[in-house]
Length: 295
Ligand SMILES: Nc1nc2c(ncn2[C@@H]2O[C@H](COP(=O)(O)OP(=O)(O)OP(=O)(O)O)[C@@H](O)[C@H]2O)c(=O)[nH]1
Ligand SMILES: [Mg+2]
Image (tube, rainbow, N blue to C red; front, top):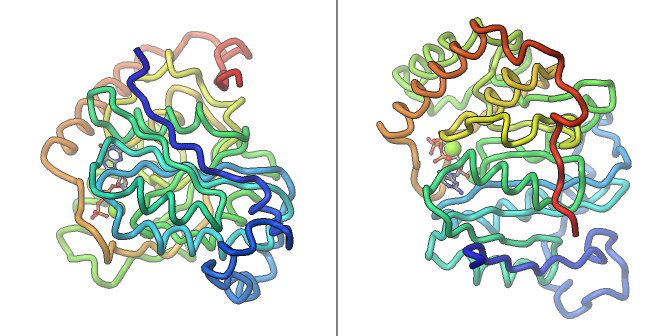
């Protein structure tokens, strides 16, 4: 029985902005040219098609803003793109919102119905279902600025296997609204993972990769919030970081809880065991890399 439901309403023509495509819908589309013009020069478009994968749970209220910002950031992009939302059966109207937004943007929603509800499992499923090999993963609440997507993709072109949108490298900053305790707990959680990696922000949920270079899902134990950490440690990926300005969420509510904190500690324990045992004892082979779904 297929327990997933996919509402594929993407139309690749929208990504190219063909003047003949969906004229009625275009009149409701946001004016993304202005946002594109505001991009810094170093955000010059690169040309491989890209799928933006966003895990969502009860984010209906913020989806319009997300789609508008992503569309603005990628309006000058030199190739096709799509925005794939992987939703954990929110039942909050997300499907209707995406159906409406899909009239003027290449956005689609995949509803996951298989328990457990989980961010990392949703991300991995999204990576598998993505139309394109090049993927960017980000949160739905606009904590991760979509305007940095071209910079992440640019860094991928320089040979990195994983590019993190980083809060903790020079040039990056955190929302002023973040309380001291939030900053401290983020720093502490980051410090706990630091011996496993060589980057400054291993807990970032904003990253770009080519899925053909990622470890296959069978090599991961992905439950929890920190999928980039899992990929980096088990895949031994060559990682680089791009500074971002990290914003606090303004719409919707946090899904962080004690449950996610415990899941993180369990994930850390597994990764330390893996690391101390010497990893996979051999360099990852092509057969150990990610296999996209056949279409
Ligand atoms: N599919 C899916 N997405 C999830 C789940 N939990 C959280 N998300 C999404 O993952 C992203 C990060 O979740 P947030 O609630 O923003 O977590 P956070 O960024 O640590 O905390 P705040 O920004 O303070 O709210 C958002 O896009 C959420 O909608 C889940 O169980 N399943
Ligand atoms: Mg968030």
